[in-house]
Length: 282
Figure 1 (tube, rainbow, N blue to C red):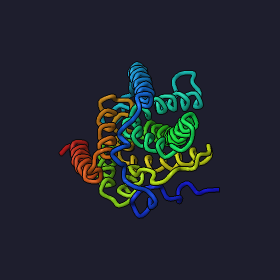
Figure 2 (figure 1 turned 180 degrees about the vertical axis):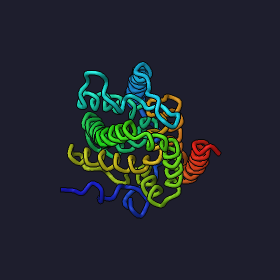
Figure 3 (figure 1 turned 45 degrees about the horizontal axis):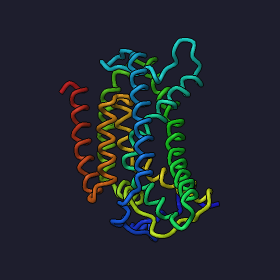
Figure 4 (figure 1 turned 60 degrees about the vertical axis):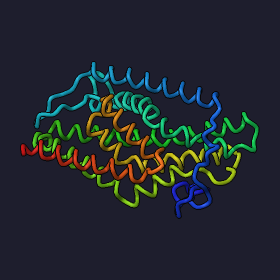
């Protein structure tokens, strides 16, 4: 079986040999692809706004240290942990396409072009499988995040000392997320995500799904810092989501993506230091 994490992607980076940078003709995207993409994005945004309103209606719990704990990390009255996890996963799955589609759709179109020798309906199906594999990575990540967040919330509810340290910890997380933007690890995954397939991709369903999983892994690794910032700053806060979405889209699509990633890192580091200083009363 092919190792998804070790298989090279198809870009120009040393870790992504065999591909090329996107060419100008890749911009000639048919109206049908644009229409479907816009419909998916609009649906996801609508679902995200609805989930955000639902979260606001649930309210928040005041905690030691002067911060508020979102109730999505806890069980509501009469709710099982399985039900709480399902609710979180629904919100997560609605939110991720809204945030990632602006950066993902050009990449999906380049994959669609790499399936060009097949019939149009086959290429459409293979491209959909690439997208499904990509989304599956984010769904699995959400399934891992919820129990960690719920466990941390439970500890903070039981240990006021730890709860008081949460604002400082949030600032530290933002600072670390900013520093990650300067690492070679970040740059490698960013290049691999941005790379266009440089050859015709295998036209079978399993290969398309593996390609989507590989793309999702690169995206999740590349988005580790922004995702961490989102989680500690308010996962369903539409303003935070908009800022994180803009940052992710800029570093993925702009010609100087690595420079933009470092600029975003500098802003995040400054924000992290500010949050730490404010929490420490400085």
